[in-house]
Image (cartoon, rainbow, N blue to C red; front, side, top):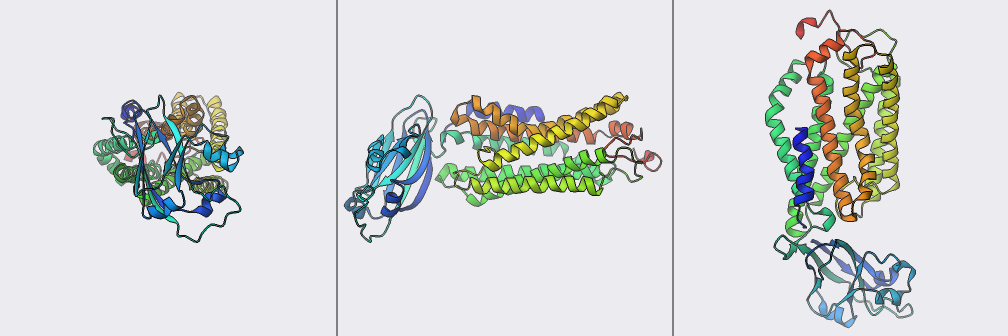
Length: 434
């Protein structure tokens, strides 16, 4: 399954098409004056000719107010330092709103470029002028990139192109893996045994990740047709993914802290249960609460983003979340180094190394991908991080599944009665079951 997941990134990044969006709202003179041009939206055009379509309900009032849309390339970062009149004059394109519908073609560009759309009228830069008490203008703006045939019909911005195909392939991979492994996994869960608790948490986390991918796919499938999508599905995708991450973090911290803090104590007679000491539970719960708070904080700080995604991590909460994951990885590394350096059994060292491989991949994939994405172009960074994190976390789950489903290996390791193992089982009470 891991090999199948790895191929998804290449299939999306190499074979993806650009895909515009729909923005509705009110155009107001007060807002335009306050902001020196009312911000409407931002869109990244790429390749062939793009298109902006603006529709008004009261175009006669718009013509009376000399209303217009202003298009700026995102490279103009000095707009905030300009006066109001200079800022309006800096626009690359001006679209006068004097008809019911207006079409503005964006010329072909050598590379994807972000454009901002602002609204202004005759009162925007006239601070002393009294704004008449007219109703705000109701508008609909549609932005399109070119499709594979060169026609401006697609609703996705350049940095979002390909995500729809990725989620489709991801769901296909989940379906194939489910058809292959659902029966042996169900039998393992039904029989119980030393891996029962870990397998339940892993299965729950993977199922939640699959639900998140399904919600994202439904949202983007609708978005590709109308440029709006289903925001509720986008929010559900965030929620399921956050719950999946919290579940995995609790499991990994419970295992790591459980076997670390219980070293030197006699092994319990109960089969396969991580240590529920007050110290290990406090560490696990504390880590989970911290991550949950940071995830929610990051979501609210990015509430104005066009698509739901907490993989970019450009806010303070995102940076703190990265620091938390790096810190947990360093803590795990120090614990494993102490254990492996004093461990004489090759079998047990292999167990620790396999477990560490899955943990490190889970904790470090996000920070590493954030750093790696800086070498890519702006329109590729979000896709690299989003796709990379999902694939790496899925592969981490596969590694842990292989470790804990390998009953013969685990039995040989656990039967050594090592108090350093995270999960121990009685040699006398359960030998006959495996």
